[in-house]
Image (cartoon, rainbow, N blue to C red; front, top):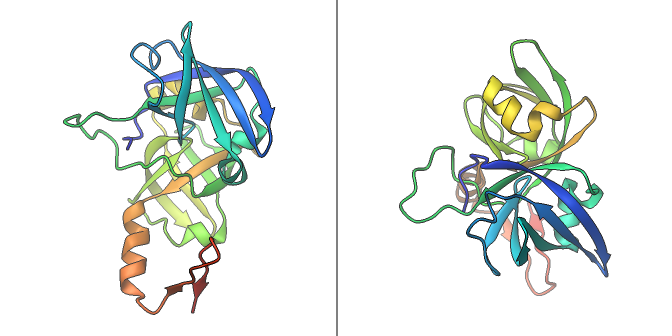
Length: 207
């Protein structure tokens, strides 16, 4: 569980392709200060398990499913990434409940001089995004300022722009999106006739 309050901006120092997976080594002196094997660290909003820690860097394995759903499939050495350790019991929830389970990717569209930043997202995720609702973009907890079709905007303060990768984004860049999990539960409870197929190892919604 995370809060969406980025602790530091780290850097991918190595990417090793594996069969149906990838191994990333990420430099992050703050998040590795107390990290150990098995800990969870969010990398651009993706919850990953630490397999090794050495010299201010940590290594994680990214499975095929995660590569399909996130921007980490295109990760390269030198990329800047947002890092956050899993919250501890009793911590303040400064952002919102972020699971680190990325729902899909969106595209950076534009940023105005006042910090208002617009993103485009897939139609299947747009229904979960509402004005004044919460969304995590590359692991950053943000409040939705406006919604119009398959686009939404957030207002980014100077601190967020300087301390996270969102200040580096250019039009066309891909970002990870995690919608508010509460919206998905509400939908599930409000539409009880949706059935999930079982037995095939993969769920399908039937209407």
